[in-house]
Image 1 (tube, helix red, strand yellow):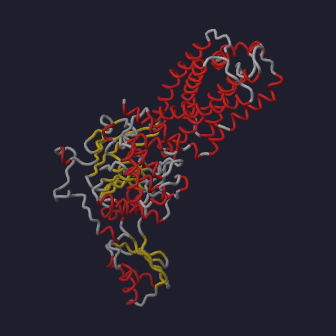
Image 2 (cartoon, each protein chain N blue to C red; image 1 turned 180 degrees about the horizontal axis):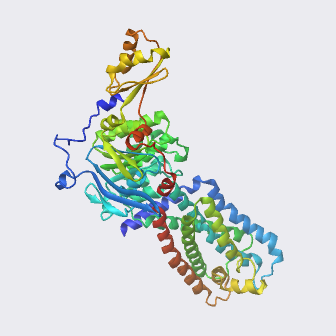
Image 3 (spheres, chains in turn yellow, orange; image 1 turned 180 degrees about the vertical axis):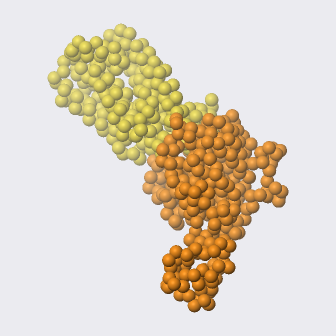
Length: 254
Length: 350
């Protein structure tokens, strides 16, 4: 067990050390989310009615949840690359804890997710976002965010090993997750959608998580959203972590 | 290069103390470094291995020679605990590759044809990471990394991301990574495929140094000259089985060794030339137009000898060359077909 812990840290470190050396990844983590925040705030913001909130307050929790769900993309790309470049073989020939390859990978995502969420919050604060709750609730929101991001790292870990190339991982992940984030309360009130979409959006884990974030950061009525979001995140982990592990065993064992 | 064959320092038939090498059925201390029996592995409907037996004595080099897709990589992957065989058993340093896999991984090093290093990390970071995954504390892993970089002539590039390395440098780093824990057994999957001749030679010398230090090496190769140079013993692999085995000399004897090809400047003197050269070989020289072919077992002096004989007979020579048997020749001699790579199998094994 100690071995699993230290090996996980070694792998996580390996995945983080490379970040500053891959400019395109750094841009994906910083510049791109800021760009989206600014575009939504200033291009769509004026046209979208969000009763009870200013649009920037409405937007920031939503866009941060969307952004963090995509944080796991690096995991999909990284694992795919490792599989095809023989690194997984190297790891598997070492007397290390086997689970550490995936655990370290997803742990590294938590760090990068925390980083990009912080950047987004700061950007939000600059353009008019403000917390309306206690420090404790705000921190709880941050924790929920990281948990949700962690859950999606496992989804992407699975996807990354399922497909044949990093490019395919990219497009499959995008096609699978992007609409999910849009048919939710992330950018517009669900009430504004046509009935069918609205029915979907109301049960979408993104909606539940975004609403939970709004209650933790803005003091919106929570209902069951916070617990609902935690349960969703845990459920995603419970389903996708074993799937990813099984896929890892299969992909690596060929 | 072939001259090396005759002065191969290691004789596989005896151990260091001169006693005959014993199989795994002998007492434990004399157990072979690697022994496999009846290994079978299929990928879906593709049968990659159909019953492989293998024995490698401690401190020797076993070369698995065969074309792409013959099953060489699958054998290495099973022995390196990456893959479970469908049937059969294998032991490496006395440990079962399935039952004792975790323990065995502390004793083996694996370097592959894909040069598995993280290209976003520096050379030193790569080796340090591997050391830590072997359970070393960070400082010790770093120290070991330094040692290896120095030994592999990579110290200047220690702080550079490995994506800036040349193919030869990457391959050396990959080999260094396999040596971090000083494993007594080293698996090398096509260690020089795709390297330029100079890097290739360098890598050969490194492998020879390792063997001189007592490492047991199992390597796969598609090149007869590589097996020639490095291997104490060769197993020829074709369609998932071992079709022949022996020392490089034995194998080359079966293939017919090297051939002297002499192009005469006058085709009509071919018979006279064949007569002059006849006593150089066991078999009668072959004639095809102005080309006379003589099988020679000893390379040393063959060309000089032939030229002298022809000169004495007053026969003019246009061109003369020693042709070394290739993998194709080996396969032709052993199987009657040339070394075709089996692409389907290869993909499954990849």
